Length: 267
Ligand code: KIV
Ligand code: NA
Image 1 (spheres, protein in one colour):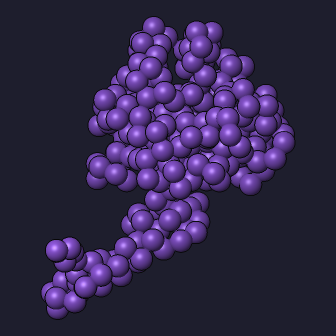
Image 2 (image 1 turned 45 degrees about the vertical axis):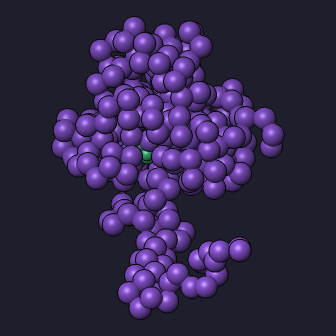
């Protein structure tokens, strides 16, 4: 893969082989994941994972842009999608356009993501018509945690399932090139995936979605208490502790630096 993937490339993957997506917040991780995935998401989960905040609500536009620029620099071929932060787009289509245009201009990303269903459909159509591909995000939407009553899986009653299906349908009809389904019961994820035209990207949803996404630090074992839907593919937390512990011991015993790590005068 030499050319960077685009939102239409992802849109065309509906019903085809699964789309692989993962988050990254910096150039180092972006470079490592780029050859293996189609989408790198600069998620506002960086609030908790990278900045130790309690929720995603305190993230600024400037912070998302700084991380977005680093990820675009590090990931040469994946589609980079940047989350629009809480409070930067919800007031209406014009505000969302100004925010999203700034994110795209200042980071070089290929698309933005925003949270919300039917009530965001008009905004999604407005952006899409003006050259800004939008990834939608429905179900458990962390920016709405205060309204949802915390981080709770969604779709446990019939009315809730109908509302989420209607949300997914609305954002797909509005032109979202993909829809993240987060924290919903599996049968609902199957129903939505079968019903809507846009590819669904699941997280805590279903293997039958058109793609999957995970927070990179969760799957690498770098975060403390990841949700149950996360699978840990590595224990980098333990590897970091072991490495730094060994370094500390060698510094204290003066075995680091060794002869090969220091310079002697040439003449
Ligand atoms: O912020 C984030 O990382 C996300 C993904 C979990 C979908 O929105
Ligand atoms: Na997010």
